[in-house]
Length: 70
Image (cartoon, rainbow, N blue to C red):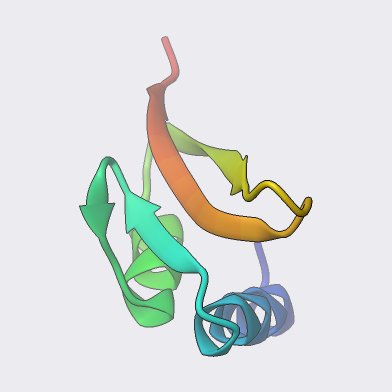
């Protein structure tokens, strides 16, 4: 991921956070900066997104789960 993509990713996560969406990394609350930093420093790791929706179809939680690559 290049620098511009990280900036766009951070902006996307900030929008979610400002909308009241809970953001988590491996089941712990995390800030947009913590999520982007984790993506930047990963070596042999990937993260899977998991969206949790409310009863009206709006995202209420966004989780990132570490996936080990073998």
